[in-house]
Length: 184
Image 1 (spheres, helix red, strand yellow):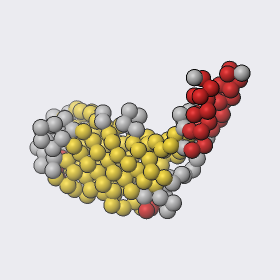
Image 2: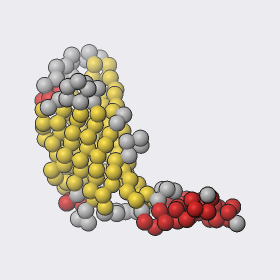
Image 3: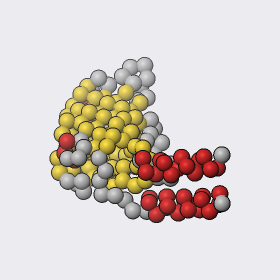
């Protein structure tokens, strides 16, 4: 009996997660383990240095009217003694889900500048643990000098976002909880 229930549960999860839903309003928490903020900068004018941030925290509040949505992101920065975090607070979203501009205030080392990410919403799927997962990508370029940084060549930094965010899904959560009880 347990085997039948588990097989049915995982079949439902696979079918449920196989198709991305177009849009699902709600408050999503950024999944730090599955999200990435990558950097690319020209180094010594002949090579490219790549980097990424490993701890990303934040909230994406998707509203019924997509352009009313809000984004707040906090990234731990290596310079822990001073200005240990990078912060982004959205001020405007314009465009469509397929292609939108996410504009906001980016603060690095205490300096705040307005930036716009060219972004895309990839959809929402239900995972096997009772959560909806929303995915986004975005890119922008900033100048290091705008944030008080010196450069040894090119002043431009490319920022690449790969964001996955979670929120509880009542339907799949109830099925998941029932299976957990049966297993115990």
